[in-house]
Length: 457
Image (tube, rainbow, N blue to C red; front, side, top):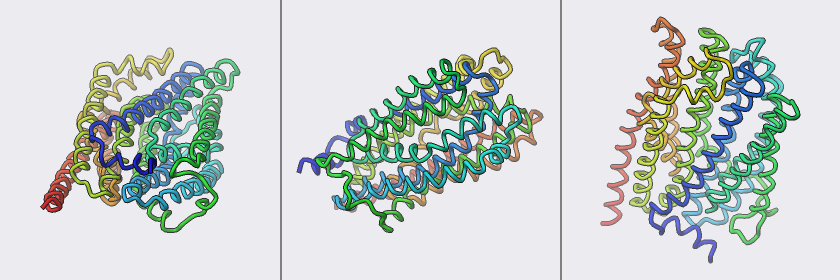
């Protein structure tokens, strides 16, 4: 009884308090994770050198590709879990846990093996030079060897949030970040492992926290827990999870494609210096985006549960609060990126004034329309959280494929400085994608309000 009441609070507690309860741990966790991403770059930049930072930038497309497959399983299954708990379908909710474990093991092993087999030609295709290839290859060899661990860790963390344990999800992220910050300087500076040390620290810390997550899900006192009877794949659960997870999969896949075009363009028009500048900017911008994604992770269980329970007024309220909070976050990112660009990028580079100048210039271009980007990110996650992947997919594709990719191919040939054209493509895509998201969101909110009035009458 107590277990079901714990889930029912998603449809009963004040929405503002619920969003704080779920979003704050997720935001804190994503902030910590993003901070480590930045700190890791600082360790590599300061401890290994400028070429290592440039090589690290080339790993972005591969990381986006692995994240795409991980998100399709983890995010899709966690969203389905929230909806099923809202519908009080507890038997299916338990089976989702078993399916997530098996799918992540299969996908993590296969993807890691395939990418490892073709790693060097893949990195060459992304724009790696003779100077940067060894660093990129050393880093990704270890990351891909532990790919199955990463998939399982991220998948179980998503399910912790969906099963009303957002604080545990936050602790898991904190544990990973803390261990990373402990191991990385030890491996890089003390043992002299270089960029391989940073990758090894990441995988070891994830293994440690994965063991803890499995222990949490092994408790038989929890409604959703591990047992032999759920450890088999079910076609229906797999299909629904992968369908709902298709939007984040496509978002990350598009991010991979865009990152390939950006790195190749930077390498062609500006050389390793421009590639390194983009890598630094990408890490800083990702920090702001990940904070909004943390907010989305807090919103999604609430939205999914109340949509499944038919409580439209609560659904719309959590959407409104999430958009307001996301706008505040991205506006702060705009102010920091616009007025404190140089101090931020200087953290990553030692004795590299040209790299610092180029990265600071690029950061100011990227954050140009950030104050309205928060709404676009929330909109995509909102439609996904209520089991409408088609709309979420469309919104993700508009930004990445329909607007950004053509801009990356066209704008460098319009500007006299072709690297400037690459930088300008990003804010150009942001403003157009935000317009499309705003129109679609207003239209669908009106439909939800009409449905709410009809239910009340």
